[in-house]
Amino acid sequence: MGLAMEIRRDFYLGEMIKRKHNGLIKAITGLHMCGKSYLLNNLFYRHLLESGVDSEHIIRFAFDSAEDLLLIGENLLQIEKEKRRVDPEKFIAYIRTKIDDQGMYYLLLDEIQMLDCFEAVLNGYLRKDNMDIYVTGSNANLLSKDIATEFAGRGDEIHMYPLSFAEFMTVYPGDKYMGLSEYMLYGGIPIVVLREGAAEKAAALQNLFTEIYIRDITKRNRIKNTAELNELLNILSSSIGSLTNPEKLKNTFRSVKKSRITSATISKYLDYFEDSFLVESAERYDIKGKAYIETPRKYYFSDLGLRNARINFRQFEEPHCMENVIYNELRMRGYNVDVGVVPITEKTQEGKVVRKQLEVDFICNLASSRYYIQSAYYIPDEAKRTQEIRPFRKIDDSFKKVIITKDIVQPYYDDYGILTVSIYDFLLDPHILEK
Image (cartoon, rainbow, N blue to C red):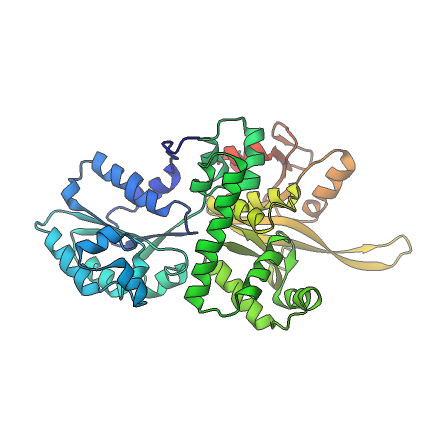
């Protein structure tokens, strides 16, 4: 695949276009290298030009660009050396020279967290009627938490994920079956997808981890003991989709690594991973009791390629990877996703009453719609099917219940009204659940 190839991100571009002139600061957040800058400076910039905006009225500035910083009399190396951020006075003075009429100006600012006092600067610009502001922030600094607090309700977040499978397939030369295998192995980070060959892709992923993500997390949170941080990432990587909590992880460290790390430290590290958008956690929800169960949780990687690189492409269990892909797809589509628990009581053959918990892989909520989803890698026979739908049969509401399988099947409903679809149809048709 040549690098000349452009991956369209129409969904996110649409989200930005919808928010034009809404009087808020549009902040594009997401995992480092997932395509935020490209969306802002290429795709959205082009949209503005095509819709008739004069290029003089579009001000683009990247705070991590040595050339852009020279325009305001700043030096990138000096800033690094002095461990400081960009001087806001210099930036404001520069912007002043760019605005010379009452027409609408579009401010496209990349890596905004490198500007000192950026919240105050942007809030100042918000007061001007002729400014429409768009920023990106690398995961580790412009956190979604910060947006809510810093801009006092005037921030509007567009959260971006690595490529969805449908986006991936727009540049993948093979069929969807080969495509999904590759996507589950190397993930959807654009620069990795556009690399040729397995060795190149693997090297790019390893490099991203050490050079960008780990460095970023340790620098931002001033972590001294990176060995434990790295080890925790390894443990999470080898157990995606498994229920866990800090206490359980502490015991793993104790027995395997003879480490004395505390569950409080582990909890903090897990937060750092989530803040950097490397992983997301899904809470458990008791469907009958209609209540959240505080712990344990399941952790999923925002990009499977990163997860696989972390464990040197060793443990590639497709059922877990498939579950992770489904989770990410649901999150991209805007659903809140929990892990479902259905408590039941049963009689054994000896007549003893036992309490059990049946698992529903995902409960997805968006506005008033809800879906219950099971990820079933293969359903070779009726016995396996009965096992998969058992939790569904115990849920007594009328929300739609769906099984997603890697088997190649036409979508169909069974006698209980349960929909079965193949993972290929689910990933490639955004409206399949509503059908």
